[in-house]
Image 1: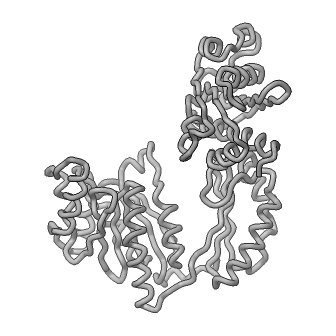
Image 2 (image 1 turned 180 degrees about the vertical axis):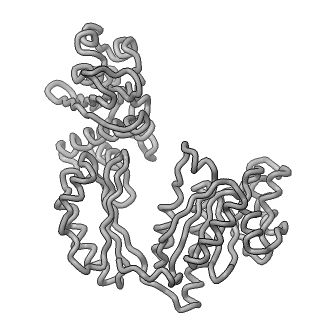
Image 3 (image 1 turned 120 degrees about the vertical axis):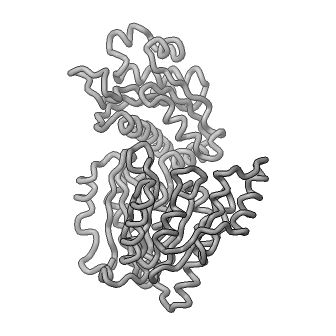
Length: 430
């Protein structure tokens, strides 16, 4: 979309994720996408994103930079009761305001804890400390309130880092607050509209090649690609006037669907497991899963979907060779002949779990997630997946994934679910 000059802060936002765990690994910042979409609906563009650890002076520096380039700054994290939660203190220091215990913050926190059969301890009382002059943002699902204030021409909003709490405050309080500010300042912008398309099975470079020439020159639309272990996300984004923007996106979206039809499995915020769940429900089918290298990840993903008890019967983690034989009936001689990581064993696992569960379809996966256990013939990332729906209706496939152990497990789970999705579509699903 057309970009504003960097010297103009109007309707530009920055998100700041606070927490040392976000810097050292093991945790990802899952709040930014939600905030970007929520602000975009107001016509506020998130142009900057910062991540900073639990160091008060570092947070102050990031805040000082943010207010020079954005009119809306949203912080997430650091509002908890522990000693490393220092966002309140950092905001107070940066803005030159004192922290004061606010009655509305204390009352809201006390009421929430009472619902859980608890009373505030000394640490939790810190959560009621709010910079003077700031507005308290009630937390409808948690104990830590947020707050907002104006500083150097920017609206500073501080929210809890827990996604559920952050989203609740954003929806109930922050969005109406920012909308009212834009209205009063006559700064209402066209909403930023974004369409997302999820693909699997095609590398990012190939997706890019297939979409070459899709966007006409000077069209007010940005095309974005984002690769992850779950596939390649394609996005179309515009901030054009609503009728113009919607018309252009409708045309371009059909172009994406046509060019990527074979690999496109979902749009919007849908996940592979949600798509598969709808197909299973529509066709009245049930499934059971035999997992080796994914260690239960496929079953976890399927059962994350509400209502999955209607189609998920059971799952078995058959990690050892003995488990494959004892639990699924995979012949020991088959494993000896072909190896546990083989197309033959994957097929036998899918058949075994289907027969024992008495379900419509059995799924399986076996592979080498690494970093050890590989040979020259069977490298790290070699994975076989299987599907069995009865005599004459079975398929198994080989994949060679790259990445660390976690990534290979994620890609393997996606491959199994996509195999099921394609099979279900072949059965007449849409």
